[in-house]
Image 1 (cartoon, rainbow, N blue to C red):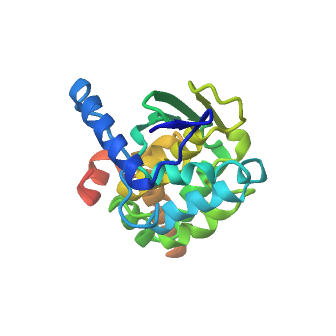
Image 2: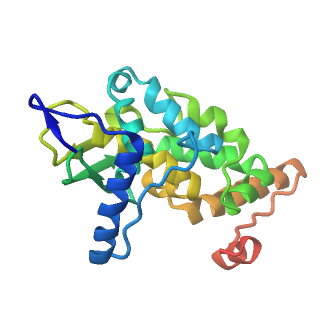
Length: 239
C-alpha cells in the first residue's frame, strides 16, 4: 500500500486478501492453532441462526451506525484468529497497515430465567432435543433467538469489547469484524453459541429430556418419577 497526500490509497478486496494471506502464513508459523475466519462467496453467514446473530447486531440502535464497518474487513479475511470460550471471544485482526490488533469481546452469562425458558421449550418436543444433540438449532428456536426483549441473543448492554488499535470510536472496524465473525463461526459449530452464553450444553439436553418425559408421564396420569442419569443421556445421544 502506498500513500498519497497524507492518506492511504484505496486497497481492493483482492489486495487485502493477499496481504491477509501472507500475514496469516507468518502467524501460523508462530502458532499453528490460529483459527481465521475465511469467507467464501458473498454471504457472511449461511445458516438461519448465524444470519439471525448478524441481523440482531444490525438491529440495535447502539450498533447500527458502526457495525457495518466490519463487513469488508471480514470478507477480506482480515480476522486472522477468532476463538470462542465461555463468555469470551479473543481475536486477532489485521489492520489497514500490517499491524495485528487484539480484540476482546465478553458476553454476559444468560440469565437463569431465560435458561429455564429454554429448558421448558426444548422439553415440549423430543424432536427439538434430538436436533440439539445433532448440533442443529431447532427451527422452533427462531422466535426465541429474535425476541429482543426475552430472546437468547445478548443485548448491547450485555456485550463488552475492546481493541488495541488507536481508533477512538465506540466500536472500531476491528471489533465490528469480530462481531460478524462470531456469526460466521456459529455456521461451523452452532454449539459454540451455548459456550459463549455460559450455557452448559449437556445439562440443557439432560434437563430438556427429563422435562419432556415428566410431561408425558403427567399426561398419562402416571406420577412415577423418572430421572435420566448422565449415562442414559450419553447412550441416547452419544455424548
